[in-house]
Image 1 (tube, rainbow, N blue to C red):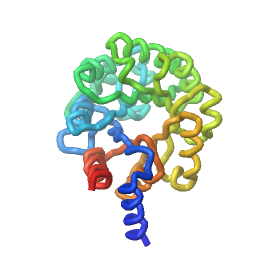
Image 2 (tube, helix red, strand yellow):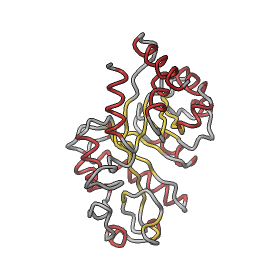
Image 3 (cartoon, one colour):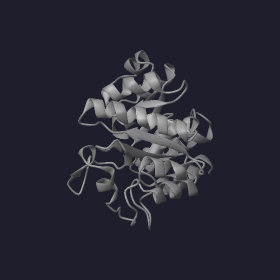
Image 4 (cartoon, rainbow, N blue to C red):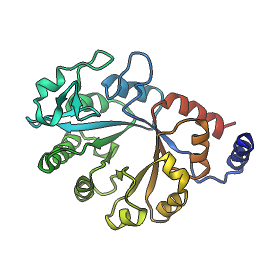
Length: 256
């Protein structure tokens, strides 16, 4: 049955049934390769080098108001939001780099080609989160990168603040999965970011988003079957921990 479904998907693809080929975003950069690490500057550069459409990364604000890049709220027991930048950035990533600041990250990114998918993390303090968003937007403006960034947040408050604050046309996405497309449209949001598993259970969400002018991202793409399903159902973007593999598979599927 699985093979029959894959053959059917290929026939549909060759017939031009699908709306678009999804674009590939490297999740925390292209870290799943030799000499790289999650949310490192090297992972950003590697994502650009293999032709990813974008690279996702995570932003926190330290106790002394410095923006740093890391996924988790803590590094080896050190809480980022309640620690100084010097304390946070003294830690080394798996590739030997120190934890980067957003300023260091964007200094490199401005000379690359890919888009920047900036996830602003949900802080313990709402006032800290608000300040983090304000400082992050100002940093992208300072580097002249406002036209190459889109924002992601799991925070409901952060979502509303971002939508109200970003330049017109900037994509703001919400990946928590508890808002339906019609709610996002009511907020003037233009992007929903769902787990692929959820989309496969509720594929009608994709059409509802597209009918409202909202883009759809799928994350946790687990293999070729997920990828084919996303193509078949018109998903706009996929976020991948193995972007080189998925770029290669995508090319084979779309350009047989």
